[in-house]
Amino acid sequence: MIGELINGMFKDVGRAIIDKEADVIQHLAEDQVRAGASVLDVNTGPYSKNPKDDMKWLIESIQKVVDVSLALDSTKPDVIEEGLKLVKKRAIINSTNADEAKMEAIFGLAKKYNAQVIALAMDKSGVPNNSQKRLELAATIVAKAIDFGIGPEDLFLDPIVLPVNVAQAQGREVLESIREFRLLSDPAPNTTIGLSNVSQGTKHRSLVNRTFLVMAVANGLTSAILDPLDKDLVDAMIAAELILNKNIYCDSFLDAYRKR
Ligand code: THG
Image (cartoon, rainbow, N blue to C red):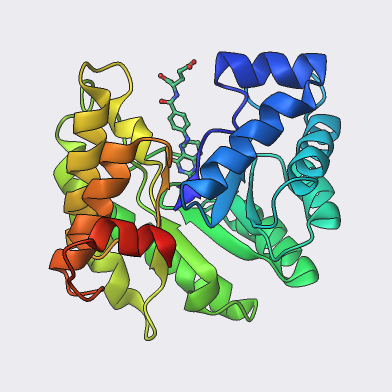
């Protein structure tokens, strides 16, 4: 569970970043970790005028109250490097894509700072509209990572989830990609998705999110960027892992999972 809530795209967070209200960020950090997130995504958002300074401030604020890994979410390598200099725990870079120059920059940073990497199955021409093309890009990414000495265990392949209201045909393609990405290497690479993308602009967001998450987990998904405070979502995830025999059944399996 990678907590998605520290993202300047949320109004409250965007405002907290501008006004430097650390307590808003710190509460979000504590709440997400308490709900079971083992990683927190950190994104300064689309309105940040100075993303390097804002990333720095976010990380410093977060690390005063929680002790978890951070996923440094930015399209700008210099913003990511600013974060990598500050993190106390091993970070995840979010993200590279399959572009040659981007991979060189991001995998170079990952090596220099011993970070893991989320890699999007897209390139300059955008997000593919089928699983075949996603798989080709993912294979390119895995090969390049290996060139840099980054093994599949330190790679999170992201097929890129699109909103179901405008890209309805892509749900199946993404699920197929999750299944196929596992076969790219042995050990299999990790996978991740930006789960909430699927429900952007829809009604019944929580229902759409948890239904998609369960289907993705059934297809082998190993992590997700999601809202850990959505209890129904996390319950569905725990139940899905139970059905897949990842945890031993007991009547109190929800509590047992949360206490471990
Ligand atoms: N892959 C990777 N990283 C990602 C994404 C991805 N990072 C960002 C995003 N996608 C995942 N995080 C979010 C966070 C919030 C929302 C969706 C994905 C979201 N926000 C509300 C909305 O847009 O409707 C904001 C509402 C508000 O303003 O309060 O849904 O795919 N690697």
